[in-house]
Amino acid sequence: THWDLLETEEGKYNFRDLDWQVETISDRGGEIILAIGQRTPRWPECHWPDWIFQYSEEERQEHILVLLEKIIDRYKDHPAIVAWQVENEPFLKVFGECPAPDKDFYEKEIALVKSLDSSRPIMVTESGELSTWLRGASLVDQVGTSVYRITWNKWLGYFYYPLPPAHYYLKAKLVKMLTPVEDIFVSEMQMEPWLGRPILFNSLEEQYESMDLGKFKDNLDYAERIGLSPSYLWGVEWWNWLKEQGEEDIWNEAKKIW
Image (cartoon, rainbow, N blue to C red; front, side):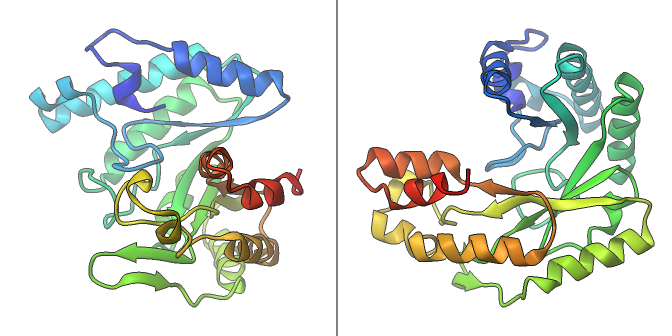
């Protein structure tokens, strides 16, 4: 629910596209974890509408709470919605163009969501490689972790995380021991390339540096060996784009999963 798409003009909400997505998924028997707030998946993470920049941080936060209320009131009775994801990796400092993490405000968001809909679990997402998960897990019902095996940055170029699958499983066991949270799963399993610029500005050869058919199969196996269920695969729009370019191997491999 990117804020800049829902509230292009202050106080004027356009849910047409999101309504279509929710109904399309529902019609196909799917379930939805709806990510809400100022920080939602995809770069730059914080999807602010242009008009919000005139306001102070305190005023911006008030607008965010209004946004949450509008979204939940609209969709809380929809049976396809199975959980509310409040913000995306809200405690991760090193990724995205966002303000510094604010635990006090995040607690306000959680309290508001609980007051508006106590029937669904609230989840937080955390980085699988750059977070202990403890801050988020102490506040919510569910934790979703990202799993990225090959990334890119301007200092090192491509970087491979040499972590075994047990890293995530054992971390989940520890977090369950130290916090009330009982449900931990993979919310974002890397199944697309990580690139230094928008994907369409990279050749297929560059894209395949960090994700090709071999890495795709390897990551499927890796996700299974992590031992956390479910694992949500990240990158389906890229698979579809490849198919439209005549590169159908990954699309056809993905079809075998379902």
